Image (cartoon, rainbow over all chains, first blue to last red; front, side):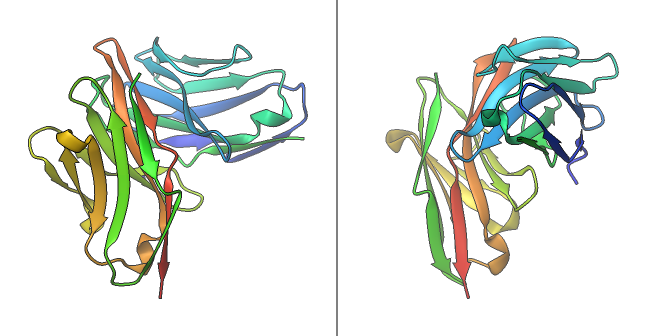
Length: 114
Length: 115
């Protein structure tokens, strides 16, 4: 058990809809990262937050947004969903923002857009 | 931007045989390198990380990796494969600055272990 909790585990929704994915980091970790995993794109970095502030951005679409709250949990909002957004979305946390700090992953939220 | 390339999307070995999963990195500065493993329906777990303290890094479950700067490689090995090693393995490099880092993952190598 990594200590990172993601909800829900599965989400099925229709094109054009909006969903919110939630992540609670490991106790004591201040950094939260979001990744998208799909068969064709592999594991893609979306965004990183540290103690409530955005710190690094990857290939995150404008339709997607995230935030980290004062209690350090994070939410990833996906809007105007398209079929291609179907993927496994992972949250990971780490103790700091240093490059050698390993990531601790949750078990992911599987999003299916129909 | 830094990147990692994993050679071979699938590797198949017999139980008890040597496991060798290849990873090459591109970086103009000493990199932060990692190997992660993903079992079905789970998130990634850290196997080991390169800290520059030693070129041979030992990880969990009997895995180790050797950092070779001259070859820009960080291959993962295990002397004797076990059925429970069947999983997907990801090499990763971290890039950024004191403001924030992002970990970039390779495409992954799926390891099959035959009885």
